[in-house]
Length: 88
Image 1: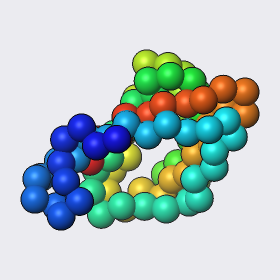
Image 2: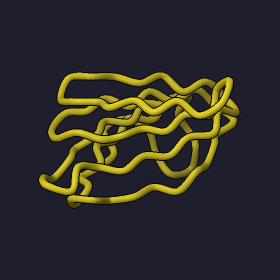
Image 3: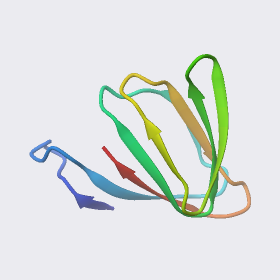
């Protein structure tokens, strides 16, 4: 659900909430812009490629900052729905 922004890129920032089913897996990817992900509910394991692969467990209330060009992926908890707020 988009809170701020539009699909045409008419605003300089986009904020959206994503509901992820248990065990949702996002493949490795990167963006040409900075991205913030906030865990609103549930948990997720993030893999971030900076000086090798770093794995970070995020819980409700945690935030991760992903700089432009940083390769990353994540998998949500296999036991619960996870909701993330993405800002980019």
